[in-house]
Image 1: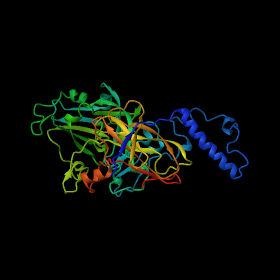
Image 2 (image 1 turned 120 degrees about the horizontal axis):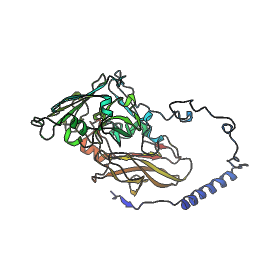
Image 3 (image 1 turned 135 degrees about the horizontal axis):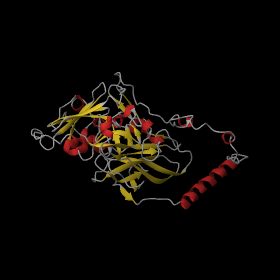
Image 4 (image 1 turned 60 degrees about the horizontal axis):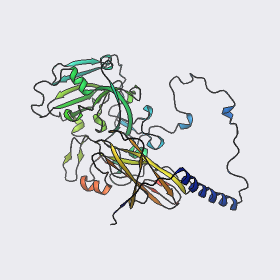
Length: 429
């Protein structure tokens, strides 16, 4: 096997881009003339009808909504769920820009529907192995010192459809259980201070700083045990996302955010935090959210989401209309830190080039990457691979399957490839 070689970053200047695009435009014009086209494709600039009449009044939409021309940019589900209330919907990654997910497009995963919670009646209880158990109202929480941080949340089942090879699905249905928001709330460590800290008996059986059980107020009572020592410094109990209160489907009025941990640990509709000295082996950490390995053992408490990336444009469903310059862009993230670099290949992994990262990568947040590419009109295979701040490199599917087998549903983070045929159609194949 030929060893892949790294090429230096390729960046076209605006002048070289114009020269390349101008060359393809000239060729297209020659073809049009040979075909007998009598008039140019573009018409002179006209005053459009919407420029001749007054627009909608200022309060036509007291809460802003997208343009009707963007009606297809919505959450979609990859499958029908057999149980009432159990459902998911996925973020349209290929239609978004930057790294922040609009609130109305943040992915959903519910185990028993979305509860309708009155925030004035909602309470958060901190109890268990603490010195002074306490009940907090929403007003109590909002009055505590708060902070805002940008982090991604990813369902551990994201891209699980690709374990057995290319699913043929577009990026929304392969990678769409992923969103990134600015979260505002109170540090878990601040709340622990409010109850006097851990009691003297904490950690006697489990060792270290113990565990915390987070439980939601939904009908499924979504419950997870979390290692306190690993999350105390960064976990937030939040009541707002992207500058407004949480949406009901994303945990209103209160949820837990555990940056970098699998999505189900970021418990929505949070009603209690019980500090314990060992994991309580709930349904969601025994029969669910464990990975069956090839040798029959189960991989349990695999909290962090490993480094991952995906090209969102071009991606399945897109079509390259003519040979020429196309920017390859996508998203990269890691639950163990920040993204250090992303590499892109347009020849199936034979060669790689460094992509440009937009801004300074944030800790446990989405990072947008871009790379320049000239499509020659021939079949191509495009891929991306991420390296995070720990030095971990996103693996190939073959390497991941060799390590974990094909029995798992969770934590699939292999390099994803898209195939482009000579007609410009992009496919997951």
